[in-house]
Image (cartoon, rainbow, N blue to C red; front, side):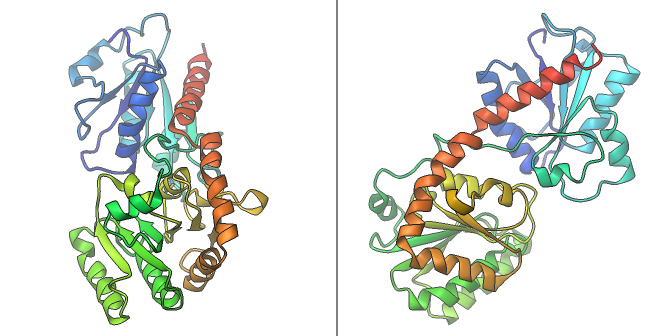
Length: 351
């Protein structure tokens, strides 16, 4: 306990984007020497963790420091931090990460105002906060998401026609994710582009099973069942990215959204809707790595996608810029380093 400098509480058992962030980030933070331990249920056993009874030892600061950081990502994690610091007088500095892109309730504002430092996962998120915030955008593992050495072999390995270009849409299959927009765009575009095929990868939970079934039937009725594949959920999703020439992120709403980063790290250009952080992570203009279009607009999604499908030179140029763009700005090591700076600033505040 004396070595733990940062506590990352996770007080929800259900897997969520917040939980996924903790799972991916904590090992990297520790590898960089930040000495982070988790607290709470729903996390894999390989992560450094504290037991509930270890909270009684928080009155003693970590070795060589005056304060320990409590990094909350939800309301139900901010409140215990406030009680431990203000009621029990434990030497804690409180950091909160906000990913919300909506006006906060009065209760949430009350909690946020009592933080020592606030992080926003995007500029758009920061605009919804009433307190100063440091923007620390999520990053991805560029070793896991890396280009294929042989794209033809990558397609063959996944049972795809190695002679066709492939366009993908990955993520949960549901209305919010815009899977129907992707399918409708493919039904519109593929008949006149015989050199292309499409892949939908992701799971439809029980409440969205009928939605997926409707999409499959629509594809069958269009006579494209052999060119639009629904491949389900895969733990090796990085291998599916390596089969792609173009990626579409058609979400209607998103908190942040990692799939465009994963695609670009794999050397794949992106068509994305203007939700979450997509407009801040996809480079447009002279350094183009993709295009951002209005959310929920099928015509805009289809038109932007068609332009990339029909212009090999533009698509290949964007692909060549995609991975360097991610490596410069969006690695998970970079995210961990920027958080370390926030922790240090919070520890100095009021010292």
